[in-house]
Image 1: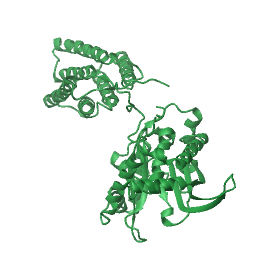
Image 2: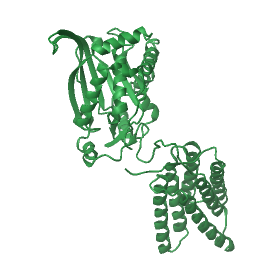
Image 3: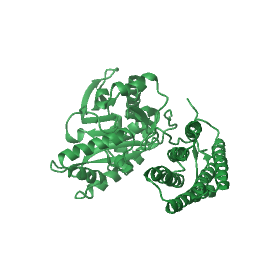
Image 4: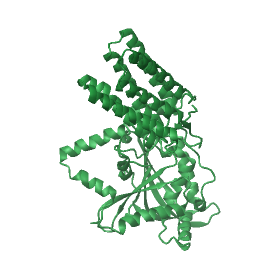
Length: 469
């Protein structure tokens, strides 16, 4: 497994603000240069709009996202490299010198990417790179000054590189031991980069979730789980039911088998880490005319049954206490429903494209019931057996679990006595690309062990297994 360092710049660091001031100052100098000289279209785009945009993006990045997404400064740095190349081309420099400079700028950008992504663990090279670039620019501007050509553009370039140097001096490594995002990660998960070759190929062979879904139905004995539910009600959790216990049992499985908390997007495998997103459809009122809506809970592998009960009841109460009001899911669906059919199709295709590249806005990921760790549906509340529900090709939900109504069965024990036990049927629909069959089987066996000993759900797990990076 590759050991990767992660770096950040803090807005509390004076060097970060110095970098922002110098870089923003370069923008002001470019405006003064443009006002004093004017420019044609090519000069406007390459020597004004491009460096100004790169400078402003750099400033916003280090001030607003520098703590978690410092690596994204690569984007404005590439813009700056293109700008400096254009300066040489438009100045009529020798083509071999231009070619050499282009190769140097490309090497600079590649090396910068490797450093800021943590693949090269020598952060002191970052200020050294900008110091070298600054020295070259100062030497070039000095020659222009003695030739009588130094103007605001040269000063702007020096200010820009000084801002970059100050930012690089503010770089610090993350020492908290936590995972921090990098290129290829998404807002809702980090890319798993250490999967076997066969697993890596599966999303390209089975392109959709319904291509790759496995259907499985089993019966789960709930004799001990029912006793546990009664115990929790006596403790004061009056609304505690099997649904809460089932969610808690699944969360405990994730704490031990984190690969079931993965998902496929853009044909790559991602892990949600410690974020377990549980989705469920509920009715605002228990009547056939009442509309359905969706809730989403944000759970942790360390959550106990009490934690899950509180989160679940808060989400349900928010919906049922205001049946005439729409939640965020209903409002978003309502906006889309207002679109004419052809426009609706285009809108959904656009959302699919954004989701494929990991560019879907975070607020849409939050309200979407198609993005999450697991979807539960209770057929028991409807008085019917469990079903095998399909997966959705839109979004990234990899697991769908349905459980049916309770039933009793009389069984003969080994000692010859007769016992009546309670069961529910559970239907599992699983995306086989996130982990293999042996892993799923291990999860199911562990789930049955929890059903036979649900008291363990009252305390956090002793250890939480972390998914591989």
